[in-house]
Amino acid sequence: MDDLHATAAQRLGAADLRYTTSRRRVVTVLADAERPLTIPEILAADPGLAQSSTYRNLAELIGARVVHRIVSGEEFSHYELAEDLTAHHHHLVCTRCGRVEDFTPSERLEADLHHSLAQVADAAGFEVELHRLDLVGTCAGCR
Image 1: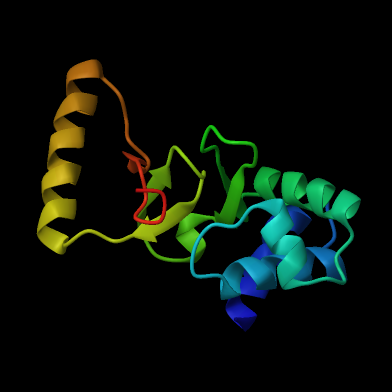
Image 2: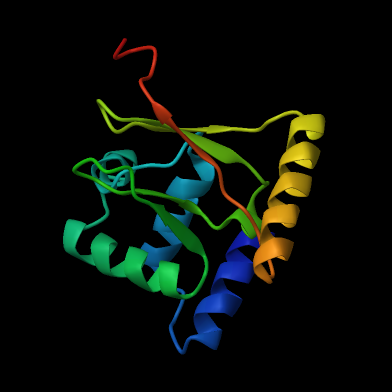
């Protein structure tokens, strides 16, 4: 986790921002989470965080490429650490409750997906940096 915090501090510093205690606490909550979290879930995980500063800190962490925002179409966005700080994964997004879960496909599926997406990008003259896949549907709890 020390490497994570060092990278977060470096990225924030490059954006002329300090790695404050509250930003560090937000990063820690996201690092400890098993899935992307909403702001109410972040605040519940660390009751010492102030809601107003958490909104601001998340915006700054997103701008510094430490955090990624997932819009599920529901009332709340979900937040997770930037993928290059964790591991490559995709999302299951429930259209009823808005819950977002991470999933990691098999190596074969990921390779097939990468190949297919590269063909699409090449045909459009597009250079891919990374890809994200969201499967949108209904979770087991809502079915």
